[in-house]
Length: 464
Ligand code: MN
Ligand code: MN
Image (tube, rainbow, N blue to C red):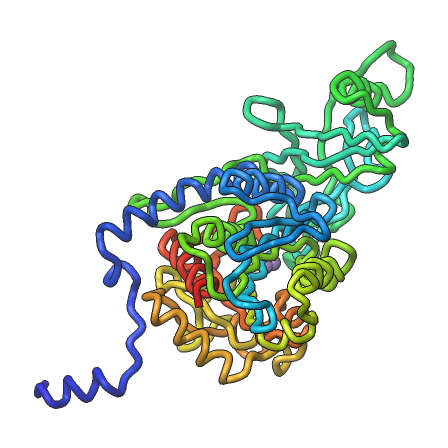
């Protein structure tokens, strides 16, 4: 090829490159160190409450203090506010007035799981079970025959919060049983979505009876007795409890080259951690106030008092604005938000649902989505070309590897994030996050390189 043609190609053609062809040895070392701490963050926070708690502990170590209304703040001050133990917003006050807007990242710390029902415990055929109601978009067949653990709270009538952690370390785990192939012929003919009905997601809790032969519900009684011994709770107390069944395995490196991480809850703690860590690591006071929002309830529509649609975020931002004599709407109209949520990585095993030219790819860095939605972009906030141009510039100037993509083929399905709820507030918003394989499964896979690029991307947004 002539030199002239080579130069022309370089000038005209888009050049997305595998991150491993770009990163230096020093970068790779930083990436590895970053991912080691990320894995520990995942293990410490398998529920939204635990994730919020882990985030607060990290923030306090980095000098963040809990925001109290009326607190006088100046540039460089670091504050956080926790929403009912399940969500969190953190800010580093910038040099400029909030009238010039804030640089925001918004991720979520809830993940698909199985929640205990209000009347969970029962005995059938001398086996004790816990009934669950799944939370978020799960593929039910993935939750059977894997080790599970229980995390959550039981709140007693007097308001005492009992923290429940069952199945940690060497403690006994739980399981949902599946049918053996020998008797699974009829089940095998059903569509995947029907093979395991929601009402079959019953957690096996025990099998050893208590008391004399002839008594009823003896296995259930022993389970209750053990729970009472450990936590002082009775059956009645399940009424006011939030007990979440989550996978009982920890985050681990995958692949002989250790380039990937397998774990429960990458969606969206991989972005939540990046957004948080980037804020904690800011080495100088940012020009604009940097805000990191970690929301709950994204997986079920961002509703409710702890979801992104709640006024919690606005209340916090308005409090900060009040301190500077700025109106919230003036702040919002000049703000930018990176909706930091995962996207689907192209999976060659299921190539038929992806459109190869417009997919996120493992090891290509931060995956930007201009829009999400389904059936003709329905439900998408669809960032403007101006917003995409802005984020392109910010990321390029900070040497962040990124690529732009869609979730899958047109009409193959779709999804949503908190982006639309931020955009509805009159904040320019765009989705960007880590491409994930096996998203929403109990054991999701991400590339380390993309995790690290996500972190650098969030940092670039705060510093812009
Ligand atoms: Mn998500
Ligand atoms: Mn999700």
